[in-house]
Amino acid sequence: MVLARPARIGAVRLVAVDGRAGSGKTTFAGRLAGELQKSRRVTVLHTDDFLDGWSKMLIWQPRLREWVFEPFRRGEAGAYRRYDWGLERLVDEWTPIEPPEVLVVEGVGSASAAMRPDLTLSVLVDAPRELRLRRGIERDGEALRPEWERWMLGEDAHFAEDATSVAVDVLVDGAPDAAHDPEIEYIIGTTGWTAGATLEDDPESRLDGEEQSG
Image 1 (tube, rainbow, N blue to C red):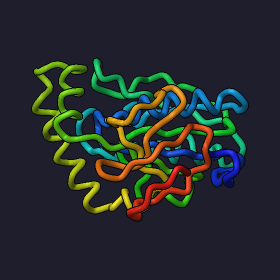
Image 2 (spheres, helix red, strand yellow):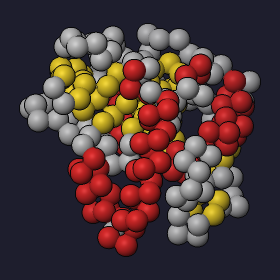
Image 3 (cartoon, rainbow, N blue to C red):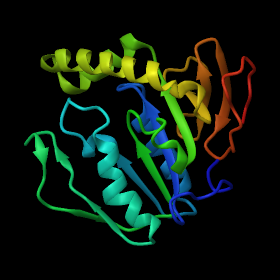
């Protein structure tokens, strides 16, 4: 899926796993990284660790670029300050990060226009709005429902402007009805357009009305 494609951040292949909150992108990113780690050095970064809480949805992009991408481009180690959601601020300590062979970045906007020149592979995970909200409230608690609802409105605006779904390499159904082994398989597409694939496949899928297995 990834290794046959070119590296664009120095020797590092960058994979974006984009999608709205609660869509299942974190789970997919973890499973993809697990498959790649069988033969390559892989690091997963979550954009939530580069945010300022619930505000400024894409504030992580310049931070990630400055702290991680640019050092990697020079063949050097990077470092970043993680956002602590309990303290509601970036921690003082810097976390070092050596250039991996594959860097998986998971989060809203990871496959947006500003990221695309550096991407080796882009994935968008989708799921119905009601399910995404339910997953979020189950995880974070009812008290954060207003934050979730505001965040989801921001996501709607972002994806309407960016048109990520027509630019990514792979669309993944984050709530599939089709039977599959989620540890090694996923369902391409969204409701009404699905096909099976495995994490080892090299996908050539676009939402063009045809079922493709990669």
